[in-house]
Length: 265
Image (cartoon, rainbow, N blue to C red; front, side, top):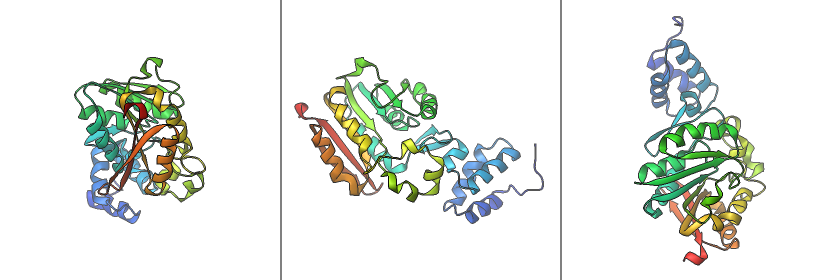
């Protein structure tokens, strides 16, 4: 099907995207044009982007750590700053690591870490059914398994005490600040992937309360937080009997907390 009355040249699409406020209109136009199967789909995708849908939801994927990660509508879009979390995990992971990606969303973190290591036993979990459906399309080809359920609840009991790297991109936006987020996140990503409770740390506290029993000796928990929340996040970690240190990546504007069992120090 064609729509001859509309100009679908790259320059015309760039103009439409730029008028809609897309800062990287040229790059976005190329991505959309490459993803569209025909003129009708191209028009639909451009229109969806113009009205504010995240680019990744429009084209159906996100670029993350050099990989193409499938991302469905309403599923949390992996941010480039979170690549710092994967980089820290890759430096700490042992050979033949057992990796769990908790609050996995699309599964991007676990898949990216697995791609950077030689041998991995990969597990991922999320409470959002839509996220799990999406994650399975990314995690299973990487040799892993994705589970649906609340935090640790759906994981195999046999993982307790065996997890070398526990990645957990917990939601950390305070509830009252959700409305202050950019519209792309606020309106089009699942709230459960964003809302961290009253102070943004409620989900984190639930994770660290159980983390020690899942971590292997020498295992580490890594999660992202904001710079202003870092001290409180460290306090939550140490309050749960874990050791904590902060890694800051200025280039990616990322703050990563790395926690470990105190008896493994």
